[in-house]
Length: 290
Length: 286
Ligand SMILES: Nc1ncnc2c1ncn2[C@@H]1O[C@H](COP(=O)(O)OP(=O)(O)O)[C@@H](O)[C@H]1O
Ligand SMILES: [Mg+2]
Image 1 (cartoon, rainbow over the protein chains, first blue to last red):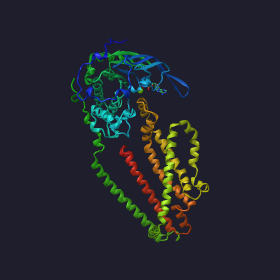
Image 2: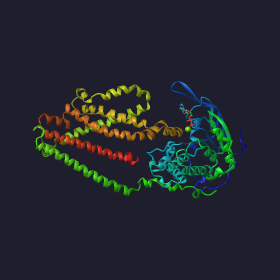
Image 3: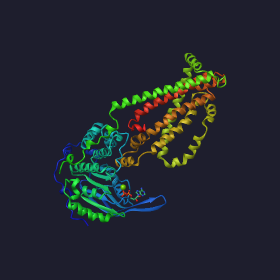
Image 4: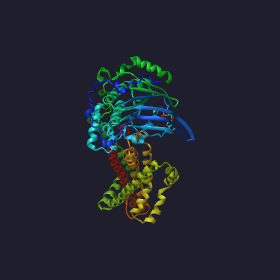
């Protein structure tokens, strides 16, 4: 099923992102975010997972079944599938917001809820809080974790600069464009230094040009460090192939296909659909998606 | 790979806040001109009303007993203010108004938030709350006076029955408008219950609570004055009752106007505070 799989980390080419150097990133100290279990290599594992929602009329509604999926650390995996096929449910399992009816989900070797402090979460709607300005939205997660004000400021400064929003840090969310709002959400996510990033159609609500800019920015950030696992949900097949190391196709509550994308990084997202491998993967998955 | 700045629309190009008028000075200028026009028109409307009143009184349109001119009313107010009577009664009324507003307001916020968070309790209590709120509260005034005596407590109790329900529904509606995504995000970020309350629910509910508090302040005034009209030792309502029983209609008019002015001033004061606390809202929502 899998088209030959080189380790994702070996595919990455050295490159530079001027604004972001990993060494200079102020981060919450280990004591605050807790220790990882070092010996585990899988970031996320689904073992024969099924989810059944019970609906008001005592109906059982099967949404996912027989999901077996192992995501190595540092992999950028995209989940594609038609709307309503259970993509969000799959992310919610990882975030511990939904319990599996059968099987088990393991995140960084732990039970999902226990691993929450290592998670970053980005949603289609940016979920910015209108009563916080851009900067304080970035600081939200840090505040919840009780990180001291000075450290919070330093971290927020860094990530606001990384998404080029230093000039807009004191604006209220209603004063920001959709693209800027998503960048604030990105900075908020990154500020927590998550090991695993869960992204639920984060660019579904922005226009094409803004999306391309946001995707590029996101890939730059992701490639500037090695250790973040990304689970990226989208209904947009081309976005999935363009961004990910691996694309998993969901349909009818099951995994229909699992493809490794062998396009070297850094990728030129604007021209990626001219890549023959891209086209090959696209053709293969498109047939099953529609 | 070409660098992002060559190939992609620049991030710094999208600056909607320049459109939205964040640049301070021109906006303030525009506002102040608008304010001037509004204030001017308000003065004109006030003068027109006074003129109409004067016309009605001097032409004896109503019963001669009722026909007192603005000037007579003014003389009454000046006289009663210089004797100290007006001030002590205003203070008595306002004290009760504020106590009822603060106590019932706090209770209403707590109850409203609790009901929004406890759907079952809400379902159980809703018919009782609706029934209590539909009751003509003025009918309770004698009851409070018998139970608590002719004093501030009776006035406060009366006003509280009005204020409590207003604030309760405001707070409940406010909390209900919470976006599920904020809760989802907070849950994943490991927010504790008290953090969700302080950092999400309270700010979400603030606009609705504020709207209710403004309304509640007016109803507190109505409740206190209503209680004083029925029986009290002091207060503006008691003055009205006394003046109207002795047919000093200029006194009744004067105090009614004073009450109206008080209501406007209190409301505007709260409006200022609200604008400060809710400065994060887009101007159209304020
Ligand atoms: N809490 C829930 N209760 C009942 N049904 C749900 C719930 N959440 C999602 N569903 C249903 O499960 C299916 C999958 O939903 P979701 O995971 O959101 O799909 P996707 O994100 O792929 O669009 C949908 O048919 C949806 O209606
Ligand atoms: Mg979804």
